[in-house]
Amino acid sequence: MPKLKVAVDWLAPVERNRFEVAWYSIAHSIVPEAVPAILYHDDSEMLCAMAYIDPAEHRLWKLQLRDGRAELADAAAVGSRLGRIHAATANNPDVAAQFPPNDSFHAIRLEPYLEATAATHPDLHEALFELSERTRRLQIAMVYGDVSPKKILLGPNGPVFLDAECACIGDPAFDVAFCLNHLLLKSLWNRPAQAAFGACFQALTDAYLEQVEWEPRESLETRAASLLPALLLARVDGKSPVEYIETDTQREHVRRRARPLIKIPPKQLVDVFP
Image (cartoon, rainbow, N blue to C red; front, top):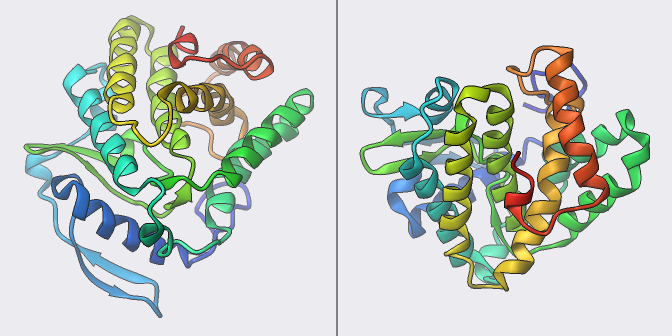
């Protein structure tokens, strides 16, 4: 769709379907069990068909986390598979050739999350736009762009990633920060399960960083740590507010946690978790 089904105007190029298919195909060659196989693609109509995944054998990670069932093995498997995909595609010209420069990632992620949030927090305008520009500029690996629990199924062969319409060549730090943000948000929302979410946060971080070999791990973690509080704030004041943060009190709690860390960015991901 050229316009996403949200309350605000949110436009995105339909050509993103082409990059989604490329992401699936390349990821399938790296970790076959982590994505459904592409069965058909019509490049002119921007349509694709993929292998069926039986819901009787797969659980939606979002529902597991919503109910406070935060399992270390699930989080670690997500981090490991994401890291393997990044490692296999980092600095790979053959992969980059399948993702020519386009506006999709900026339209679907950077503008509605980082830049739109600056309108509500003008004192953070410079910091948020600098994060957006840095993320746009870095062309390192094949990025999924939407590593969200609502897009991840947990099956007998581990996590399966769906809906890669934000795929591009970009900064892999965005992917890991985007996913960790959901664990962070849920820990702020479901306080009794905060310790379990924190353990999963660390398990995903550790499993992912073990796969980082294309650059110093400290460099990637520092970029991810600086993105994380900005993405946290974006889920209450950007164009895509998370649905389970419902009250002003909850939103203010998120703002109090995120704003100081945007002004003085942390170096390590663990420094963002409460």
